[in-house]
Image 1 (tube, rainbow, N blue to C red):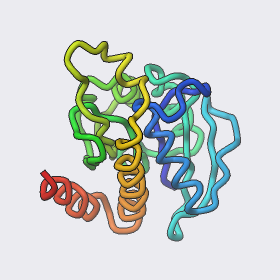
Image 2: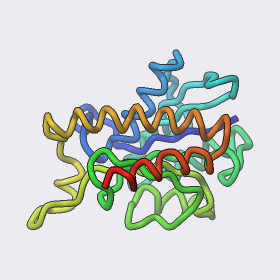
Image 3: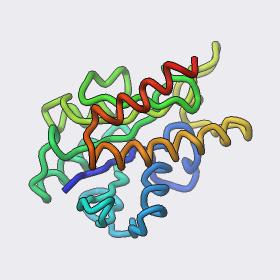
Image 4: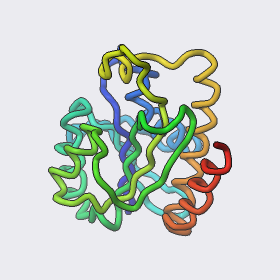
Length: 193
């Protein structure tokens, strides 16, 4: 079973913000594959389903971003899942241009507090992740204000395409492996520079 976690903050005020793009990808996956993500347990909203013949659990932690690892740990323990083998995390990344995605099989938190907390609670940085580009913080902006801000109308169009790309990347990751998805999507980003 794959545990697919989208990072974000609960509460309506955070919907469609840069920091909540992980939640947006989970919603898009749920829509595409007919998975109901409504069950509240493990400090998260979860939903079980099938993607391309593989069992998955979709997870949107309710702990707020900085404590995401508490929820992820509970889900992994409950389903006896391995972070290295079964976990895919989707998170925003300010070091990538709006709309770019980057897939990694492991790595540091890169300053992302949600990823930092997952690494702390799982004891490893060896889990797959999809980094969703939300653009660099403009000079003079407070980082928290920026990531908790909303996309412009123009950015929203680009972001929708990147969400669709992330959904497809996840399909490839669970059916053909992360390397295949990395070859396709990380190269696509390099070619678009």
